[in-house]
Length: 470
Image (cartoon, rainbow, N blue to C red; front, side, top):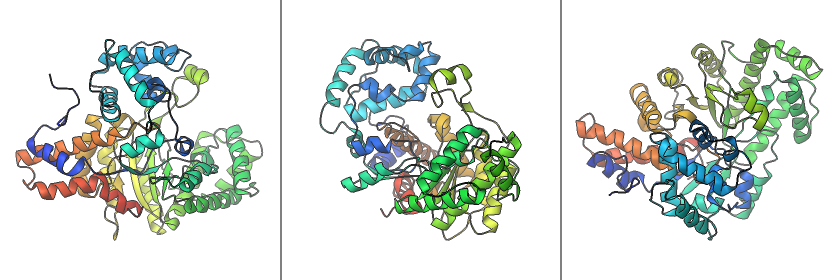
C-alpha cells in the first residue's frame, strides 16, 4: 500500500506533478511572517522528546485535542511528555481532514523519515525513533531551519524588545537571516489602562525618553522604529480586530486628550479606544513608509473567548475564533488617507474571515502603484484558513481579482521550528491548481512558462518585494 505522504501527494495530474517536482520543490523558503522565538534561534534550542517539540506551545494541536475530549492535563497540564504524546496519537485517527492530520504526517516524513501513520499502535515506535533522532547533531532550532532551506525568517517583536537575541544571531555568523518585525499593538491598548500604562513605562525605559504626552509617545516609537531598521527590520505587522470608520490620523486634539486622561489615571471607553488605536496605527504606518518597509495588517481575530480558561491558563492558548466586524469602509479610508499624503507603504492585507477574500481582492486594486509590481497584496491564507480549502479559496480570489503571478507566497505564521512543511503544502496546492487548469485547457499547456510563475510565487517574488538582497 502506498504511504500517505508520498512524492505525488496532493498532485492530481501529470502537469501538477511536473510543476511541483521540476520547479517548486527545491525552491528556498522566505518565511516573512512567523512567531518563532529569537531566543530559541540564538541559543539553537534542542528538545528532549517529540512532545516538547510538537505539543509544548502549539494551540492548533491543543484545540484539536480538546475537540476530541482530551482532558486539559494532557494538553497544557502536568502530564508527562509520553502521556501527552500518547493522547495525541490516540486522537490522530479522529483528525482526518483537519490540517493537523496533514501537517503532522508531513513533519514526521520530512524531518525524521517516518512515513507510518501515527496511531495508538505505532505511537511507541515513532516516539522512540524520533526521540533518538532528536539527540543527534542537527536536530535543533537552527538545524531544522537549515534542513528546510530557509533563507529568511522574520519574527514578530514588540517595540520595547531589546532585540538582543537578533543581535546575537547576527554576531554568531548564522547563515540564515533572522530579522525582527515591528508589532506595536500594545502602544494603542488604552482600553486596559493598567496594562497600557505599564507598557508606556517600559517604552520609556527602552527608548531612554520621558513619555508623558501623546507627542512623547510618537517620538519614542519613532526612535524604536529607527532602531529596528538598524537591526534589519523591513516589515511591520498590525493586528486590530477590525478597522472602523475613522479614517485614522492624529484625530487632534482627541488623541492628546485621551493619552493625558488615561496616563493620569483615567479611562477610555470603547469608542475612544478605537479612535486612539487608529491614530497611533496611522502614525506608525507613516513611519513604515518613510523607512521603506512593508506593512502587514492581520485583522478579524476574536481572541480569548473562554473566560474560564483565560483565567486558568492565560491568553493565546487556543480559544480564539473568526470575527465578523465590518471593515471595508474603514480600511478604504485608512489606505486612502495614507495614499493622499504619499505614505502608503507596500502593503499585505490578511483576513481571518474568508468571506473577505474577495473584498480584499478588490480593495488592493484601488491602491496599486508603480514601479512596484503587486505593491498591494492579498495576504496568504492565515490561521484558521491555512488549510487545503482555505489556501485554494485565497488563490482563487487573488487569481480572479488581482495578479496571482505577483503573489509573494506562503508564510508559516508559526511558533514551531518544524512547521516549514507548510510551504511544501502550499506549493503542492498551488501546483495542483495550475496543473488542473492546464489539463482542462483553462491555461496554456506551457510547463516552462507556468514553472517560472511557480518559482516566482514560491520564493522569488518575496525576495524581490521585501528587498532582502537574495
